[in-house]
Image 1 (tube, rainbow, N blue to C red):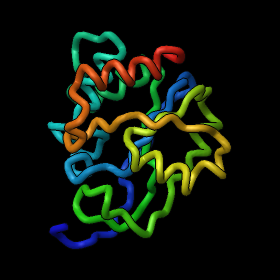
Image 2 (image 1 turned 180 degrees about the vertical axis):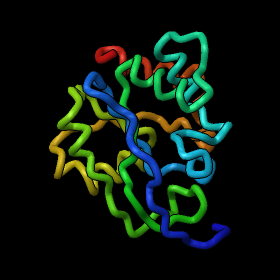
Image 3 (image 1 turned 135 degrees about the vertical axis):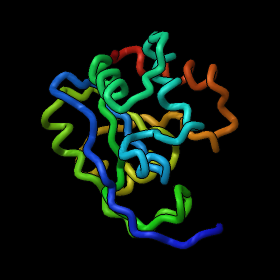
Image 4 (image 1 turned 60 degrees about the vertical axis):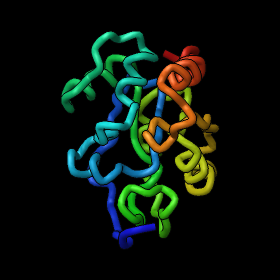
Length: 168
C-alpha cells in the first residue's frame, strides 16, 4: 500500500432532518470528498447516480445544495461510521485507530426506520463500534465505490432499490 498514514477527522456534518427515515452510513469521506467538504465527492463514485436511479429521479444532483435537497426530499440521511482515524489516502483497508461517530443525535432526532451500510467495511465498523451503543440492526449493501467492480450500476440499483423500497 503506497502512501503514509494520516490522522483524519471527519470534517463535515451529517445530512438529515426530522423527516429522515433512512440512514446510509459510509466509512469516512475519501480524499476527494474531504477536498469538496461533502459526501461521495469522487467523480467515479456511483452514489449520486445510484440514489437518482433508486428514487426514480431523472436528474442526478450535482451541487452540494442540490445533493442536500435531494436527500431531504427523499427522507434519506447520510453520515459515516468514523469520526476520526488513521488512514492512507482513501483506502478503507488501511483504517486503524478508529474513533466512531456518535450516531445518537440522528437516531434521536429523526424517525430512522432502517440503517444501511454503503459497503462491507462500513458494516464491519458499525458492528464493531456502534451496534452495541445504538442497539439498531444495519443492512450491508454493496459499495458504490468504483473499486467495487463486481457490481455494475444496474445491479447496484436493483439491490439497493429492493432494500430501500419498503421505507421510502
